[in-house]
Length: 118
Image (cartoon, rainbow, N blue to C red; front, top):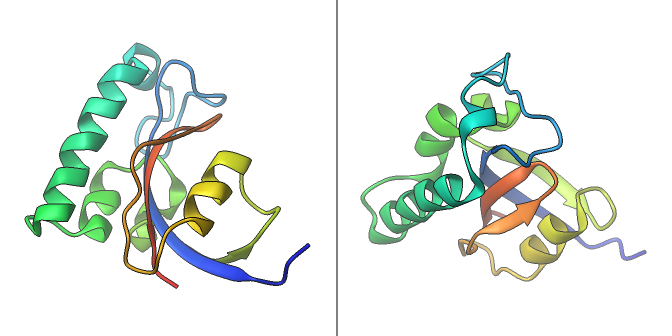
């Protein structure tokens, strides 16, 4: 295993297909269980466009909208190496340049947009 590490921030939107359909902002999963993957992706694409256009910062959007507990840190996941994240998330993050924002990434957790920060 490589000792290469990356740092990333992300915005996760859970949906009806998420392995754990509940979050800090929806503990009962009432909204998540009624959200389709397509609805989650549509929201993420709008957030992604706002970040790319400079209209919004990923950290600010994640703090309000992300279903991950990292929301309280603006989506920051800190440093991690290969084998620590779900494969699709890891592959996407290691494939980004620092400061680059991913397209939609699907994992068992839900749909994400990811920014490599280190």
